[in-house]
Amino acid sequence: MAKLYFYYAAMNAGKTTTLLQSSYNYCERGMDTLLFTPIIDDRYGEGKIASRIGLANDAIPFDRSFNFFDYISKVQKEMPKLRCILIDEAQFMTKDQVLQSAEVVDHLKLPVLTYGLRTDFLGETFEGSRYLLSWAEELIEIKTICHCGSKATMNARIDEKGKIVRQGEQIEIGGNDRYIALCRKHFISGTVGAE
Ligand SMILES: [Zn+2]
Image (tube, rainbow, N blue to C red):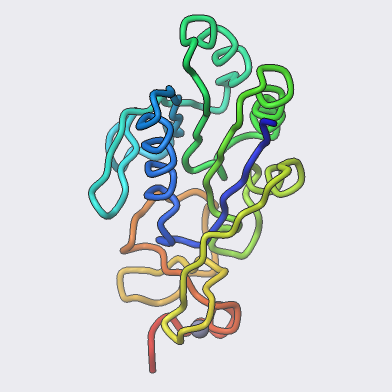
């Protein structure tokens, strides 16, 4: 039975690598997948999903007005072997888009696997993650660790000097150099590296 999955984690835990591996597993068995990535994230060029360890795949870009249900229900008719939908950076989905992805599961009978951050640099949920945490049947944590060795659950934004940033816009795209995964204790204390 198809389900809506939310694979959540802190920064740099390997979410994208996991997504690309899952897609590969379907394709290896002769099944087709559709990959989506938000336009907001152009680190690797629009319409591409790339992981830090070198894997990459083409993806369909979506913005805040994109309708997942309408798009996938059309494409499904031309793709008889379509078996799985995968969405990267799913924290950037809107509430409506999370509901559309649930409709894809319920009415088109396709599993939807979403991958994203649970919280922003202030510890607040993103719109997409808030509704995925509420609506997905399956919540799977992809684990990573803080510099102290404890589980990292928070994402700190750092400035050019490596100091933690406590104010600013929720969305400021950056890779490893602007964000760091920390345990809650070190997120609260603002300790971004080993002492
Ligand atoms: Zn720590």
